[in-house]
Every structure is written in structure tokens, then in C-alpha cells.
Image (tube, rainbow, N blue to C red; front, side, top):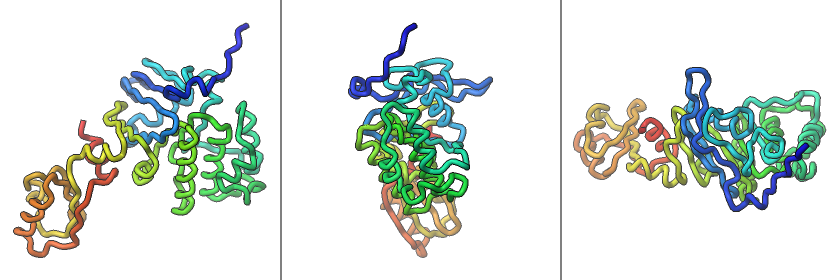
Length: 306
């Protein structure tokens, strides 16, 4: 009987922590992923962004070993994530996760620590995640934000080299969200590979070294947040104007437009020229702001571009 040796994290440190290579996955007639490729590197937060149904959850479940690909290859530290030796190299916080209501915070952490060969200490986990003051409370009595922090603690308690975080700050107030951001940055700073899925594009912009855009199961863009924003190729104009939407869309260099009552958000390659033309048509032009496209602007523009 052969025994699979444990994963050597140090030997794998020079390459990617996890890889999805030309991965395809179908559920009946529906294609969830089509020749999807992505590498997750140590010391980086990679944000996987896309509309609902784009394939994000399928990609995460493949990395966690919960699904098998129909084509292509999925590896964590050079091994199939469905194997037990690779699974101890992965921590996960899933949006659909639940925990037994009757166990206390400390009991949950100690239980999850037992699944890993070299876990963090219980006291360290409680301190890192701000749970020390509620360590003896049962899960069922926690607030929504406290439950989120505990689920985050369970994802990191094994000190795994790969951490998958699905909507980690849902339900948190601004202060608690910023605290989780600091924990995520600290994970990457210690050499972990972090895969982040989030609907908060400000969060992805603040945390990620790389942004991966996915649509219809295909990787459509990959780059730093700055590169993704530059790919829009336009600047953002926000103003109050009476000029009709059809006229604004027809102005030279305008690439996209959103109308919100009296206000318009315009994306244009030549903002000064656009503003001169609007002013010539509307002397009441006001509430003017001109700036670079945000990550949200880039997401909305690029996700349907290909």
C-alpha cells in the first residue's frame, strides 16, 4: 500500500500555488467554464470578478476539490485538489457556509485546527480576527458580522498556502470591513495566495494585485487594477445637463454614457472637447466632475466588450 507524502510548500514556493489550465466544466447543456486558465501566486490577492452566473463559483469549487473538471487541469501545489494531501493546503470561506449553532467560537476554531497538520495557535487566531472577547459565545448567538469573522477565522486557522474567500465582508459595517481588509493584506504579505470573489468593486481595487474578469465561463481580462482601468481608454465626466441623452451619445470621443435624472456620467477620450460642446448646447451645465475611470466603471464597460 503506497502512502502519498505530504505537500512540500517550500519546494512549490517558486511556482504558482494553484493553477487552472484550460479548464472546462459543463452541467448538462450549460457550459460553466470554457478553456479557463488562471494562476494564483504566493504573496498576491487575485480578485475574480464577473456577473452572476459567469463561472466564479464553479472555478472556486474546482480549486477546493469539490468538483472535477471535464477538461483541462486543476492543481494546488502540483497536486489534484481532490486528494487529501492537497486539501490541507487550502482554506476557504464560502458565502453559503454554515456552522453548528451549539458550538462556541473557540470550539469551532479548535475543531477546524485539528484538520490541518501545522495550524495556527488558537489564541493567535482569536487575536488576529478580533474574536477573543466572544470566544465562549455559541455560533447561534452571534451577530451576522461576528459570524462572518468566525468563518474567516476558520478559513485561515490551518495556515494554508491557498485561501479562497467568497464575499468575505458581506454584512459587515465599514469598520469591520476595513479590519478584514487588513487581515487579507497580512495573509498575502506572509506569502499566501488569496483568491477573492466580491461584489464590492472598491474592495477588489483596494486589495487585489491582479484582477481577473470572467464572463460566460471565459477569462476576458487579466491585469493589475490600474491596467484594467486603463483598458477602458476613457476618462469619466459627471455633470448636470439638459442635453438629451441621444445628443450626448453622439458627441465625438464619447464611448459610453449613463443617465441618472438630470445628471449624466459620460466616458470620453477627450473630455475638454466634450465639455466645450455640452456647454455650447447648455449654458446651465453644472455639478461638474472629471476624473479617471474607477474599477466599477471599467467592470461595467469591459464585461460585455468581448
